[in-house]
Length: 220
Image 1 (cartoon, helix red, strand yellow):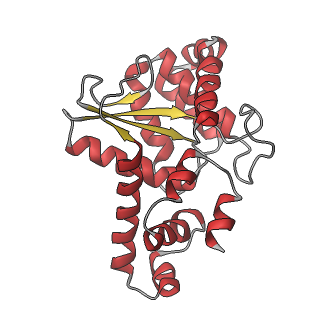
Image 2 (tube, one colour):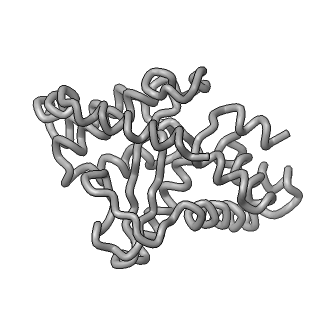
């Protein structure tokens, strides 16, 4: 059962949104983005063509984005992609170790780039790990470094917000999950060791993660 297998990996807000989208698009999304099948393999499983699989994947991402977008929701002092004064805000609660979050993040970035005056994307790093998320009892396989990845991203944001979007894009680029050592090395390259240490030492990082996790747990 694709749905059960998928949701057992972690009950995140994105998971809950996936449950509501078109069944065939959801299956394509899970097979490709979570299970790691190629477009050709997914097409064979779903008895369709690779080009149709890509169309289904794009549909799935847009459906998720449409569900979580709000008419007016601007969160101040949060990591954002775009102009905070945009007409609408798309709020993403993401985990840098989450495969399907990568596709959603890419699609959200494309939507924002196409509508710069109408849409801003607010990114809320929300680790799916017991190390910093009290809403879960077991850390899913592959999410062991989620807390450190979120901490690194937010440390960059608080130390040098002008380069955070570049760091965030790099974290989600490609198909491979970044390791924490890579993330911290990239952060040092962008903002320097001393700035990174200041960002990590402050209380802002932990407070924001706690806030994001609390909001995550409040979603029905």
